[in-house]
Length: 284
Image 1 (cartoon, rainbow, N blue to C red):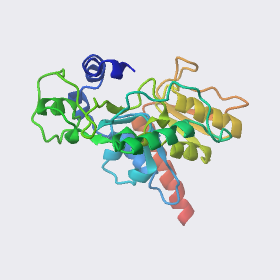
Image 2 (image 1 turned 120 degrees about the vertical axis):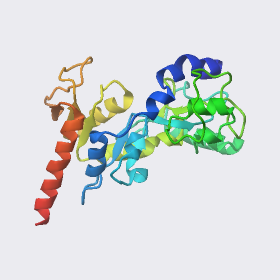
Image 3 (image 1 turned 90 degrees about the vertical axis):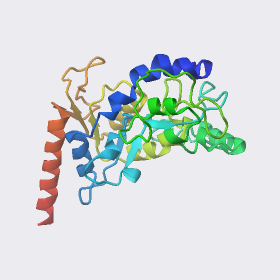
Image 4 (image 1 turned 30 degrees about the horizontal axis):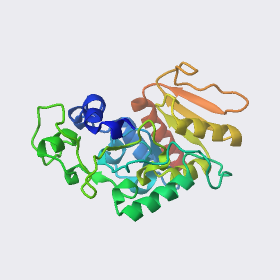
């Protein structure tokens, strides 16, 4: 709703100060990203990855892996944008279809409503597709500011604020970033793939968390599913404190968890080595 009220202020007062393109263009996948990509391609390993990060680094690893089918960017991706309707149903009642789903992250009812509405108004960017920064209706300066990649087709820009918000190239409404905002649900856009996330979590034999504070809905839902179905949990984190202010989890009668504390750039490559050695031994 803050974006609808003042799109320009949203970009200049919130988005650009917190997600400056120059900062993110300098980031590269680290050893932890590379290890995850290698684990996801181990023989006979059915590994899928859900990330809350929006930096796009999981799909930029040197090690090739089928991230198009094995990765979900649950909170969006820098450099992509979307269109939003003048109003939506995220603030209406939470009644839903198929309430018996073992994992529930979004509303099927609201998803179907948004898909139908997007089709009716013929703007795919409301739900079905994302807008690349180069396709935005905006000045070259604005596109330079909003492009987080080093391979930008635009020249560097020294300014740090917009003079006008970018527009959807189809319906000419102000276009927000392709990021899950505080008052949006996972069902608000197809990019977040909440139904696939629900399926992956509900069918998982183990759950591995990496570097999360367990402060958002998706981790709460995944942990509750693990408790209810006795699914082993492995938590890779740098924080050994347990509780709301820490990154470690308490092992108890309801939650079978092992905390692996340390820099994930060290612990995840070691995990990959252990898994690779185990599979190699199973081959011979």
